[in-house]
Image (cartoon, rainbow, N blue to C red):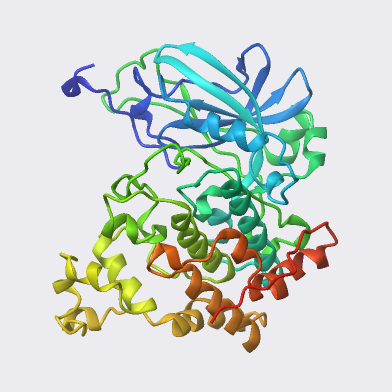
Length: 430
């Protein structure tokens, strides 16, 4: 369809871009559809730029699955990674169960083309939506941080970089009892699917490649302050940006991690291959956000140069070679590294003060602040994970053996009563 004849639809809050229901785009799905003669669509779980995700009852195995339906003719990158991660790990890695289990793959033909679909174990909400302007209890935050790190360590052990770690891609596991619900019981407990009629801006009739009703994603979770340790089972999801450094060159310029969580080498070494350390930087920003109220760097839509200025404000000087070729530098700093007058008013606090402002101040209000020894161990860990030079960052396994992870984060899992594999070695962070 020519661009000047592109149909536009009235905006509906909380649903995918309806203009992408066109040839080459999304596949229209209705509640009650049965895909592949097997998967009864019960509700919607979410969407992204390249797919929609649905909660379905597997009528063969009588359990719920998440069905990811890609846009037409999309390359099945994620399925290859998930198949690899779902295979048994030898020896068993404690992070194996903290990534989605790949179950099935099939295709559907529709008015917009041929769509690759695959099913994985379903999950609840993502950590971003349940923790925005809210705090997990410190015990829960520690357990989630440890579990997320285990998931990253497992991913790395299988030869993959995740490539897009942030709280929007960290889900919470559903309890096993969820599969006991019939679709009617599901609706009785969580409500009927929320649908909104789709209408064209010009008032014309809907074409056949657009659903008559948009489905608002179902919220299955609970908010941060309601979480208990028994709920703290994270699931690292969305491997659409994952890659294997041993067989694929992913250059810094091709990094699609949101700027607030993106490792700085993606900007300053744009023609250099990314590897596992880029995940460690993103993991550090995710852990900080789980522990505190405010992200360590701005999550607003700001220019990447502003994020670089925040890196310097919080962590100190960047490597000299980066400093010399940073084109955006004059807006924030003079030649000696002093902040410009305009930037002086908007500087982000250094690391220790950032912890006070973004974490401790809020925890103090609910009587759940970190002690001085834990704070020191946590900030030491952040320093090593947020080293500007990738080779100086800890590996994921070294993060797991750091003082904060061993003495505080893994201890939270022990208190939960579940099985936890805790390394005995403690990484000395100087």
